[in-house]
Length: 490
Ligand code: SAH
Ligand code: SF4
Ligand code: F3S
Image (cartoon, rainbow, N blue to C red; front, side, top):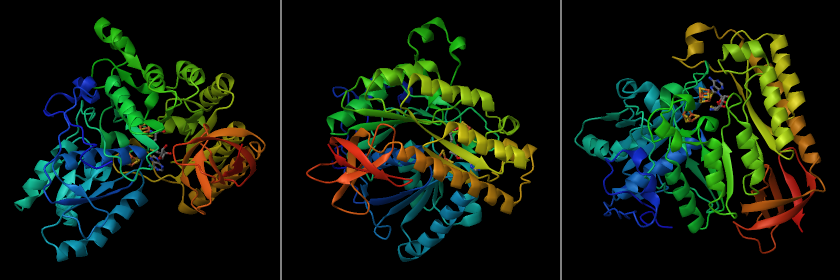
């Protein structure tokens, strides 16, 4: 797919984005083929899936302005780094990268370097004052403004826009699929987060939670199906709190007017709409929040074969006092009840987690509670982190980051080892079973092996034969490692 083909903008982008539900339906879409400006952009992305999807939105906006993409930073007129602030080391990597890019700027002074995303939002114009490494600073809700900021920077001024919006969802912009395997794509269904977990910087970098018009989400999924895609992942920081009622900042269902209630769609409703787009399209979603996931969602998952049986349900800690300090809004028991419900309603559901080790004040016994919760749940997979204090968060203001580095590291190691064991045991149980695998491409190790995932999100490799990316193949599992199932097509 060429860049210009996939750019589907409404001509008038000033219309409220949330009101553009129909924007992607074919008859309303204006394919605005950007006049080739001869300029090239290069974009690098750090952080979460939502940030990757944002880069695809930025690519679409730039293509609309006649920019073409390049994989070479030296060749680019505009170098963009889409950044993440979630932990300190994420920001350090970006700082190093910006320093590495400076020689390009020396060789080609007219080239512009821009920081996008969460670090841009967190540090704002400090980037320009302190670091003098960049020409543009653009926050996550200001990407439509990039073309005019680029023009501003061309005159020698620095281009900054870090305004957060209560409405922006980029609903009308069809992302240019970067690094795509042509099989799987992300669809952002909401932006921002209202949860204020005490350790987390996201509410400050992404602003208030708002949901995107369901019609535009369904239209994007349909567009992907029409272009050969087989899998979509619906993205949000807390998908279970998705609620469309006409647009604007999040409201609780009970506070909606009668009219808003009539047109409202919650996450279970959205998931069902996405599943109905095509039985051949797999639907995944991330991230679920233990305090908000509903039985309705679990029942919808069970009802449709094409909704993948996999829930990423981050626990963060297995101890209720720590969960309270984290402001997560649930207890250990509540979490375990949710897991039991999932296993009851969707017996073959894969479950994964995020875990933070060494949060403020965490005692040895409280750390043991995390390990014992892991023993009870037996996650198929988990992302595990040392706590990293983030400036401006509730935890940074109210608590002391008082678990020393060595203890944090040792606890994290214990968590990782246990998860390794659980992942392996979970894989062992799959030996002898047959799964439908969606082929994503060649195995990383060999061109004679294909790789893909089962519904539970486990990676399976198997001999190639004539399979192509996008094929559904039934694979029987013969052996496994802790990370991968190995089998053969049946
Ligand atoms: N919205 C998701 C999480 C998004 S951030 C949710 O609520 O589950 C992804 C993960 O990064 C979090 O689940 C958490 O485990 C981790 N994380 C966030 N802030 C962190 C911090 N300050 N230190 C260490 N890990 C952090
Ligand atoms: Fe951060 Fe909590 Fe929001 Fe997740 S739910 S993004 S951890 S504040
Ligand atoms: Fe990072 Fe921002 Fe995502 S802080 S994890 S890129 S929302």
